Image (cartoon, rainbow, N blue to C red; front, side, top):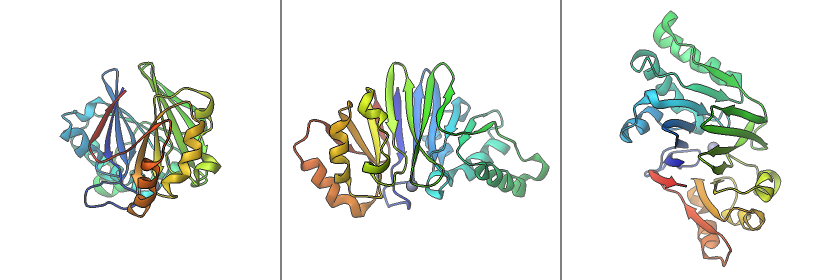
Length: 239
Ligand SMILES: [Zn+2]
């Protein structure tokens, strides 16, 4: 499984970071986790034809995680007409908003995309990728995702309230090959006692807010039985 971290910023873009978007490659297919940045642009820059995009999974309906879907669904309506990703969202209003946007542009030719409004539990399994959604407390409808493909397992925390409150405890009991933790809403050092309890020893910091930089540096400097890697835009991880 390969992960391309195309957008690693917090709620606002930075000069070297787009808002949140990650492309997952597994079994010759592509999937996206969130689309806060321009998803089609990211695919094309990687040399990935958008037709290869099987599904888009949204952790929660905040602009920095979904704003890129406006341009993405626009291009899938008038240009990449054969691209047919299945959109998974925790809230119907995202689909309503996208349809309103596309109706404004294309009237009756606006596309209805394949979509699922999901709750907690296994939300997807196409034989290549399995996705479990785990509720968090960032909003009333926010989720972490546990991805499994090619015998590997990765947890995306999505946005959290605080690690000690809503970090997915499944990671304390089950093996993971990588954990991608958001780093916008609390000091990175808040992860230290949580990471200690996880079976996984490979942590990546995502959704990075510059004001957390001192705490990131502090976490990196700690003596610890696991590795921590702050992500940057374009970082490719093969596991
Ligand atoms: Zn966010």
